[in-house]
Length: 410
Image 1 (cartoon, rainbow, N blue to C red):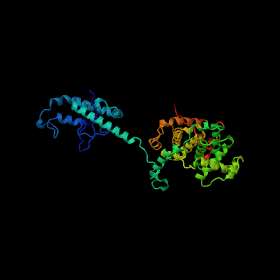
Image 2: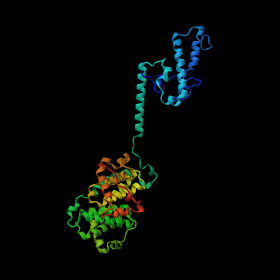
Image 3: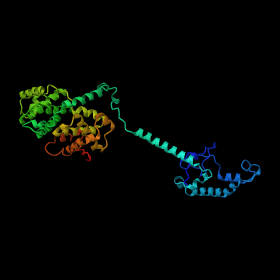
């Protein structure tokens, strides 16, 4: 039968004596230090063996019990063996105690029912401890607005309502992902060339991020409703950027600057006429939630640093150029770009519960779009459309374009 150790079986423990004497096994620590109310074996044997010893012998000179006489030699031998083991192998005794080392407890076997009860209780307590630890370390949703409680511009009281409104309104700003089939003189490649060029113009004018996203939104919404000939496509792009600047920027580029960057392909009057046409076609609806507003919120949920932020914007601007990305809502594209950037910088499985809560998208939902973004990232620096790559390959944007693409398995 396997003998339980003192440390593992609470039923075998003895109360400590008041003098604080240490264990008979060498007087030092054995695993954890346990102080027992036992005298040294030699003293016990002396007291039991000698009649009339003061305070220790048998009362009235009586003979010792036969069992004590039979065990005296074995007890002395056991004490000698323990002493020898302690002197020769002190470390071995501490780390690998054998059953012989606990022979001193064999005189008092534990009842089977008590041993089973104690073991079951220990296992149950240990299991409850594990469950409690799991609850402690279970990931929770972080309150990302708590640091802005004192910032009135952060409108913490209304921010959730604002983004709920953006969610409802983003569907109103979507265009059909196949609207190009209604255009007879332009196609997806021409659109990609236009937006790639506008990315460079936007960068040279040092405009806000919001302006670029709104510009692309205005172009797509206008082309979905109005047929445009090939030679006027660049004019549509210039006018869309002019309107976006009037909506978002403090300092707006003058019309003469737009005429200049178009190499005087269009006159001032043409720009003004197209501006009126675009506003009337869109019914003056300029207030639409673009991917930018979701990017800022989702990056906050991801607790991003500047490196993650720059890479996320690099990836989503690559998506602006691609016509096939129109099938995704702005919020979804923003979440997928941030998720892909996380995978690129830190590896997979970075989508936290906080990100999932604020984006309303799970990691599995983002995988398809994320793989498409990885493809754009891999070919960003090759071919003709390299405007986004060159923009983000500068010190201003932390050379984000040089980051390796994410490794997302199919």
